[in-house]
Picture 1 (cartoon, rainbow, N blue to C red):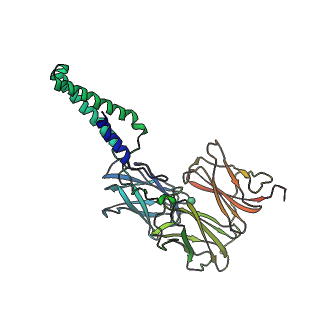
Picture 2: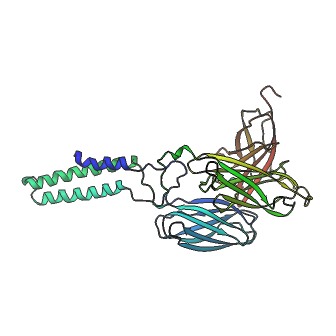
Picture 3: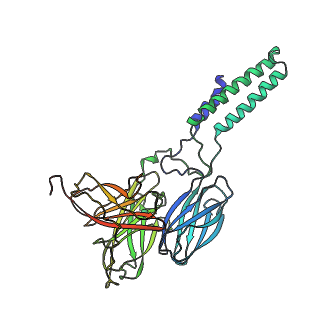
Length: 424
Ligand SMILES: [Cu+2]
């Protein structure tokens, strides 16, 4: 009996520990937000249960939708095999648009998203459910037990010593298989095929911070003209390009660009041009100083915020932007206090739907631009959105609540003046 339990114990001891956060379950969908060619897209790669197999790629385009051909190429990083697909976004017709690519094997892939003017190369890992060794042990155990017991009984049951041993051994094997079957829900799940090597060498402690350079190209764009905002990410320790960003709230990076006065606000999802290089196309109507902050996260490390500024030159192109009007006023407590949770109620319109994995997002900036905060809506409300935010210090804040309804991303700007406990 002890001899039979040995393989079970050995398997338990040797079984690799699955990596912690951000492990995408095998067969699960992968969702990546991208701002490309002026369109805000959510690209979903549907999970596959085996390879080779076709995988559905769904492109959800939010309003306003341009007329845009999109070429997709799914390339295995290991074998280089590639499969192409194509969709054409129709102006004014929000998604979803569907295409199908062939996935030849599990493991790391690159999904190239190409439009006539821009291109993004997204790292995608294809995970396929693996058969658990427990399952093999249970099925094999019952099979062997059955054969031994039946053979023992047919050859004379308890009357011949050999047959008796066969019946008894069959019984023990059956009990072991049954024990494993009963225990199996508590046993570690198998590591899916295609998984990244698990970090067992202490890398979980975190990787160095990213050093980011944010710059406009051209360096001083003119108001009203399109330019590229480049974000270069290097490892703070090695100085090498950072290419281990994990999807964090369904994007490689969440970029917030605001003008100094807060009249201009964009929440964008830069394309990945190359390892450590993200980019997004922008235009700003007013000259002045702009702030750009990106939220991102490295593998096995926490999230971080990187920032930079750039200058838009020239004369204002057109009248000042009209501030979007909320359907009803935003409800903010009369006297928010610094360091204390403040609850803000946002009335919403249309049929609410999750965007970036959440019902709603609240982005808060102080007037000077030195502070940027981001919280999510409290889930479970029937109508409207509720956010709880603790303003760090007294003063004036600019805030933008964002949510998606139908095929539109709504941005609700408002301001908050925060005081202290004593009322100053
Ligand atoms: Cu975002």
